Length: 254
Image (cartoon, rainbow, N blue to C red; front, side):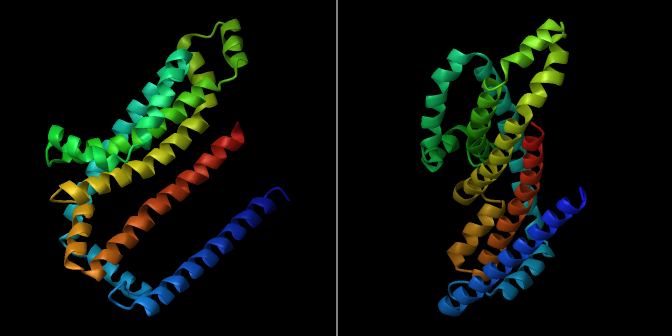
């Protein structure tokens, strides 16, 4: 019986996913019937052009540029966000002062800051990295700070009573206690960093998928617009779904 319940849940989720996909495709087809080829391509036409795009020589250099900028931005956002969040969470007064400031900065539309980014970095990959990291670092910092704040003080007292060395206390007590919340921040930061990287490419770059998308919009090439949009929805959506599964499992263990 213990193995049957997870199997039933997995089967139920698969059915729900299939129903959702069917509804989305049906609405997509109806929207095409209503708007015509000028507004969008059909689901089948989008899949065909996506397959063509994936086999074209022009696509992969742009995809590689986007992936490179995104991964560097994500590493910077994750590393800096976790470090700053841990320090602010450990020093409670600093965290209480910094939290409203971070929230206020995060509420500012990031596009308004892009000209400043360009002045500092120019139209180079460094601007894409900086703008992507800017989107992801604050949520990661906030999630990490709250994770450290919410550690049960009894865990730390017990570790001190047992005279655990600092690195053992960190590995055996602090890391497992904060990991679920930190991972949630990283999952949110993943999506926002990708959005920032793509926006940077759309408004101030000569390469990348964002640049390709803006070019297609300027030429009103609906096939390219729809295929790129489709890929930019499927890829982060699939990765985020996997991260969400891990996220739920980590929270269940707490």
